[in-house]
Image 1 (cartoon, one colour):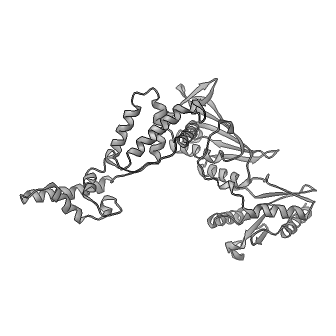
Image 2 (tube, helix red, strand yellow):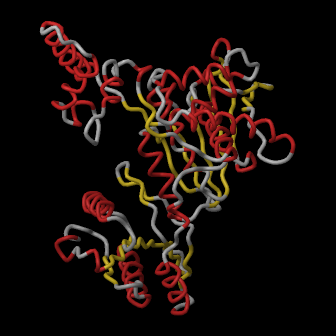
Image 3 (cartoon, one colour):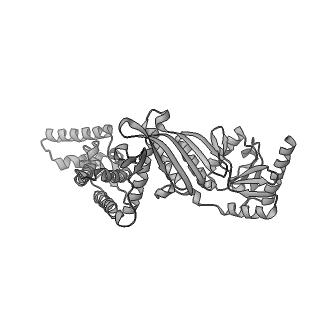
Length: 415
């Protein structure tokens, strides 16, 4: 992620406009060439020291009029590189062992540097130097001052294509704007429930969700407190605020609007983002996988009745801070509504957490369809106030329909 000093943007009429790099045509050639050059520097310094890598990068970017761009690209490559070094205590202990062996050899009048290192090497375990295999003499040379950051060894680098690096850079520019967010609103006009769950999980993880609701027409509105609003500018929460953006990009149609503090005097500016900017996400798309059982159930249910309609514009159920996104919404011709959540393609830990919340809070008119392969049994769903429909492979449409009718009848009697 880019730090604020590496944010390349202009402010026009109070609006922050990041200087995104082009991905197509002649306009893209310069950015892609710079990305390729930096990727090559990192690749050439695999197994070098951090200091050698830093020197090569400084020779490339130092004094360049495009230093902010190149350092930004380099920062993203460096974030994914892996380095190996020793902490101060094990490094000091290793040096003490080598120096003691050297003093002993000098005292005996037979000092030979290579022989001293070899004698120490035979006494060492791989763990002493943070290695996976028995240390070699070169490892001992590296280890003498391996607690210095410059002497850390580059053990792996990220080698994306130039286009992939430019895509990540453009995304990082938008994230850098959100590092200084005070308030933020997101409108999601179109997203299937699995993708919406993924987004809400990320937002909840940040701990900044202020409001979430579905408005008329199916639009989802999310309001977040920015890190500068409630945490006094703590950078850790700024990073969390920006961390949900890759999941938002997976939704089909959305809009983001934020108030951010940028520029001299830290004046409030407007930052907006929509799919039109063409940002590319690197987040794993768990929402793209729509299990066959979901599609199969919807088709079978529609064949059974004309009194009920079924759709994916599900309500957001807020149960004591836990947001639940069902898989289906049912509407009866008389106006009664209910929801269905299918627990059949979840991880077991997620199922357990969901059942705990439902047992504690309850959810009106929510039916749970539970795959029997989860082996929850009667004890697993004990304490739930709503109906549970067990199934194998695909939920039974007739069973769900009967359950819906019971809920509708109970609601009418209760009214």
